[in-house]
Each structure stands twice: as structure tokens, then as C-alpha cells.
Amino acid sequence: MCLAIPVEVREVLPDDMARVTLDGVSKMISTALIDDVRPGDYVILHVGYALTKINPEEAERTLALIQEAAMGNAT
Image (cartoon, rainbow, N blue to C red):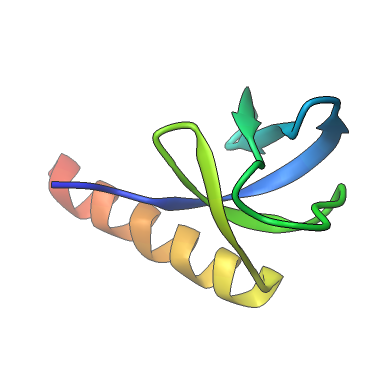
């Protein structure tokens, strides 16, 4: 099973790379597959690659659903 999750771009780096965060965790990812990435953008992340941009409202809704599902499985 594959999982792609929304993450927020915090910093655009050289060589089609960016620093993103999710729940306070920072990670460097490749942005080579999409154009015009800027800090504050949300992107869909899969195995270290940004696949596409996503609007902030959809990203927050998706993250909330993932968190809700995780909490439901914790009990």
C-alpha cells in the first residue's frame, strides 16, 4: 500500500529540493516533479518526492482525517 501525505514547504533549496514540515518534523524532499514551489505551499509527498501542489484547506482537511484515523486505531 502506498501513502502520499500533504506537507508544508518551509524553505526552497537549490537543485529542486525543499525543506518541509509535518507535525514539527522537518525533512528535505525533491520538488523536481513540480514547478514554482514556494514557502507556504502545501504539496503531496510520496517517497521523498513532491507530486503536486494542494490548496491549504484541502491539506488541513486531509491531515485532520489522517490524525482522526490514527487516533481511532490507537484504541
